[in-house]
Amino acid sequence: MIFFQKTFQNFVRKIQIKFALNLGFYFYQKQMGITAEYQSAFTSSFQEFFGNAKDVGWELYHLSSEPENDFPSWLTFTIRNPLGGRALVFRYERLENKFYAHLKVQVIPGEENWSLDQLFHKKGYTDLDSDDILSSGGEWLFHSLARHYFGIIISFCPRILEPDYFLD
Image (cartoon, rainbow, N blue to C red; front, side, top):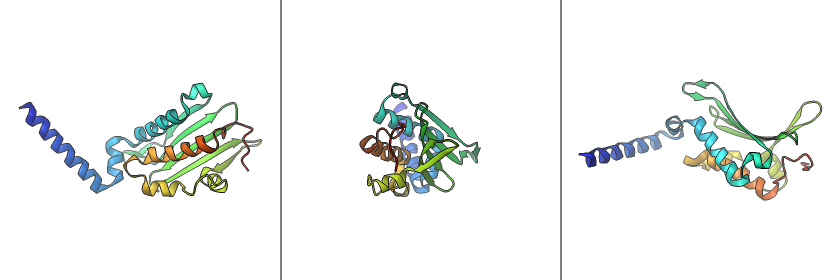
């Protein structure tokens, strides 16, 4: 009897997965919890590339909007160097299916926002941008985005959050 129950459960799960793939990414987001998936993707990728945030002296933040129809309209992941006055902010706009990656630099007065896509293109680090990753990210979209940006940072500009890192 237990064998048939497990077989039936596996069968139902396979149908759910096929149904989710037919409906696309938004059904998958609801099933898995888009906020948890986003946070997990960026946090685990950060740890893989940079290690423990406290050991590096950086702070990690996760923010999201209030849910609308079971989903937040935007999600952010921030890496901040409190001593350097710099932060990397990764923002996903769910309704527009857009992703923004910025380096925020504290200046007097206010702050400057540098688009990482533009900065990386200008310095010749990559030809891909967030739109390219969004269109090809597939089921692991947030992991693809995190690994794309963290891979470039660790390879070409690991000191980007340091105050003496030259941007222009």
